[in-house]
Image (cartoon, rainbow over all chains, first blue to last red):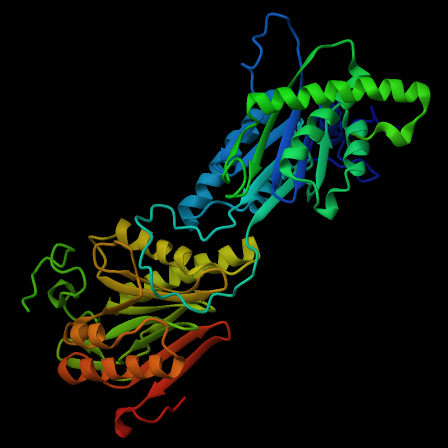
Length: 292
Length: 229
């Protein structure tokens, strides 16, 4: 950043001569120092996970949540400045509510990503504000069922309703990551925060695009990836928080919920084992035999 | 049948009370209906619009598009129902642009309901919403005067509907073929027009299926036998 200190980095609404907004780039720096967050989109759902670096031994384990539920079927995790993230979650809840009010149906995950992208972008335009110091990962499962209208009582008549196009898939998992600039993309696997490089490398190995991995496997992979991403930051303790969303026939019945504690413990155990093995593997260079 | 004066739902929830209209307001003293059939839904209506005893329009179109394959039948105040349909058409257009896919019939119906309920003491609108979407197939919803929402296999409404409750109950069948369903709607409306003084003119229909919207027009000149459009 050669043009730093030339005055073009002082305000949001001023471009530098080479067309950059330094305030946005500084916001990205704030994200890069935050604990690692990841999201995995698999064939039957979405898993969100975050590495919470423990700032003080006096903090109560499990009390300070970082993954937020936005609507029944929607969750957000973020890296960077936590209060900014909380505000973003508040806004996301308002947007989800607003969609339900006007359209009487849950907001599709992609639409929420669009609205949140628009909201964050507005904070890159004005002198009076600063961009959000967070990158948010948004996971959701849009209902695969015929859903009643919000507030509908009973299921209506059992007869009628011909002309349905059979064999079509509706809804499904969706994962998006929104950056401080307001840019958002849909992902199979998303990672942000301090350990994002290592996490992205691991996510790529999972070959998520093939759609073979299940949500239960993804929970274990997510735990392992957070542990690997933390490896470079070993001197500090951390806590792993994970949530998941499956379809109506999956373990969470279409809702965004915390991963149950027994499964979380199992996944963490496997993750610890995996990184120990990893270290041994590095010594012996037996790369082929590392798979479980 | 006796009509009350208040026009609220506590009457019978279906019939539009003509006394509720302002002096000179244009009324759709109407026969409307919508049915589900094998491939989707059919909406049907007469075409008479009255201002008191005067027929203000004898070829009215009471079947209004709110999205490609979601339409509504309007009864009650012409001005009120047109205004409501316009708002819903806007909302559904917005929905399909934002989400990149067509809205479902229930989304449309519940937007209608929200407006009708929130303004129940100011509107006189009796609506039937019918539509087809690939996720749910054909669906019919009825929104009577108070703003409640009812999902039904078929729905009839307007002043003319009183005369065809028996006919519809005896003749409607689940999963009819298109030709039979069109015939059923036509016979029902013919009967309603015959007995109801404030229904009349032509019979209009819209058939909504995977193929889109198909409009029918039948004229009294040929005793509604020939399809003109």
